[in-house]
Length: 297
Image (cartoon, rainbow, N blue to C red; front, side):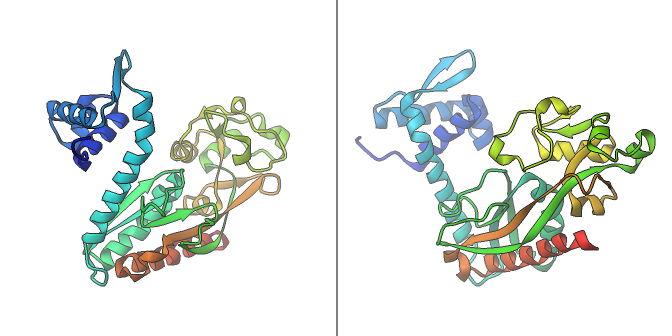
């Protein structure tokens, strides 16, 4: 290679990978389509390889391009971490903090905590990544993670906050119209809310009955969609006991069906010297502990 390709070229490449078109990548980056095209041509010329082929689906990655994607994603994470690092001095209450959390905790639990944090620290911007995939804190894809699986990396500061219980619930309006099941056999006569695609067996809790896609009358891959249907009175579905109490949903078959998951707040140990990250970490610990304790209220 005559010269090392710049991050700008890799950023355009990654945008095309995600959007599958030059126009989509341009919209995502705020650049003109011809500019994206020039970036790809420059990157292909510098690397001496073809990155994409055209098909009816759009732009398909060549094998060489597939091998580049994880490195480009690592560069994007590093660039984002650098921007956050220089957005505010370590001990100043300005800059940004990037948090990752599961879809349910991120939409139903954290917004109230983040609103309170904003009132106390208006100079700190908040970035929230909603994902059920564990973001890699070692690569600085986020500053703080709220996780349901205990991290094992020694470079992370980990705090377990407790356990959230999950059970079957229904809206009072639904139970008034259709009655309450008191046995698992009676439960079969009610519309159930659940997943659309069969999840891996390891991700399913141990339950007294086998759980399959065909059991559900409302199917949605997104937990937020499932919870919206539950609150709308579609039928019976699983949700956190703490959220159900908050939204005045009624517990169904409490002795027959229940499982739980732990809650951890995690950050990279190198960020302990960043005051804004420490403040957010402690704030999330306090708020999530209160959410867990609300099950007993």
